[in-house]
Image (cartoon, rainbow, N blue to C red; front, top):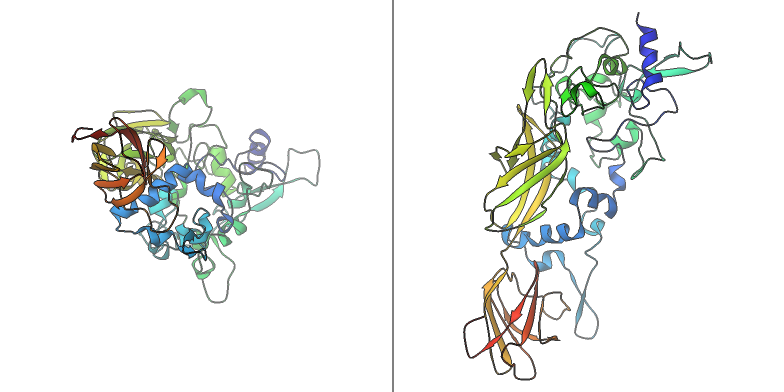
Length: 447
């Protein structure tokens, strides 16, 4: 058939489908990396959650948006002297015993799309799973091994015609090691083996079982923009350099199917799925508009002359971008309430993976007054009171000295020091959502 052309693919694209043994693992530019989810550590969490600051704000935002209390997360342990210290709350695994993403109600319901986007399909959602028996052109759950007809070494072979033609291990890869499919699927934290293995006998997975989550519709819409100079700045189905996705060229088709059957465009291909890599704003302020800039891949795509452009969904509300390119989208976000928000990019019904940002209170002191040794601060965004009998990051300093907290609410803080407070004395209030500072006024309600 077209065996020689198929073999030629591996010689020209190291990261392409149909890679020969010893070449690098598949390009990890989009989608979740082929790593072990059961081995996630803090550094892995930060890749998606951006920074320690975001994690702190995300958890603290639950106080007002989800009615959480401080002691729900900060467990107090007696120090034996009448005081307390906190059990470790900075190591993710202390609370999240396994990957938190796969012990949720959504995961139990096999709602994979809610986090991963349409890079996968939800089980039993009506997507196409062929009922006919697999043929020679049906991708295998593994791959086929054939002779490399272009090699001068008669013992050299090439993997093609299935998932592991591309998805192979690379334990030298950075920033994380890349593992084989068997390891990544067994490391998800999902407990129901039959979802993949099909029956109580433990049958080896076949492609039809794989297609219950990885259907034609999702697999045929995975592609990024390649270096092809003919169409820079957008993804063109069938018009990309081989090795940058599933449907960029016929060579990509051969790697999965192991057979040549020329298509102008792969079946069920339309708007390739967008991928969010990062957001420019991960902590916004309640009551203030802002521009959210989303960076990523495949925001613009073309299929059979139809061009697909992006919209943005934030907590179920759809927004039209004010500007966009293939790798960047800018959307004007209206005033939002305190809480955590999920962001997705939409294209013709295809949803991207999920990214998140948090909205913190509009922290402000409206009046700061003093009488004798007591200062009273009124405003918004102070949040809950510090925990009793513990050393807390929530505190008030007056003229550089830590004050005793008399009372603390979200809108009013009262604190005292040992000596009378003079007019224009500087203060700093450290809250759950950051510090606010100024000077106190004696005998007046003005700040």
